[in-house]
Every structure is written in C-alpha cells, then in structure tokens.
Image (cartoon, rainbow, N blue to C red; front, side, top):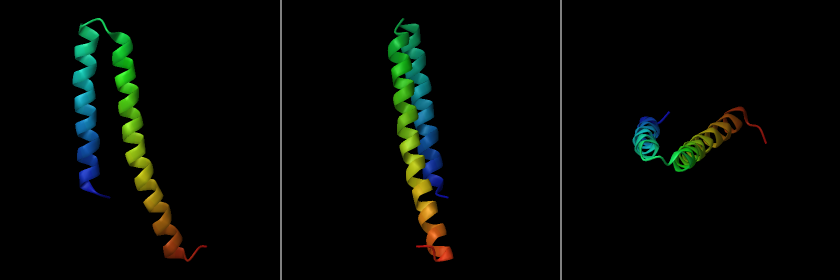
Length: 65
C-alpha cells in the first residue's frame, strides 16, 4: 500500500474537520454537511482506485481471465 495515499486521506480528513467546525460555528450546518459528504466522496474515489488496482493484481497473479 502506498503511504502517500494514507497521508492524502489524513490531510483531507483534517481539512474537512476544520471546515466543518468553521461552518458549524457560523450557523451554516447545511453547508458543513455538504462539505463533509464531498470529502467522503473524494476519499472513496481514491480508495476505489486502489481496490481496482488490487483486483487487477490478484487477477494477474492467479492468471484469471
């Protein structure tokens, strides 16, 4: 697994936590929720790419078609 991916996910999480707190304190709970959901989608796209690479590696390792 790539260590850079872990750092990217952590950076997105920290950034989202700060933005969420700022928006919540400003009374914009809806925007805070939307930014959190956008962050989750971003992280999931990164993870899905890694899972796709994992399946390709397993497929090639076992000679599956």
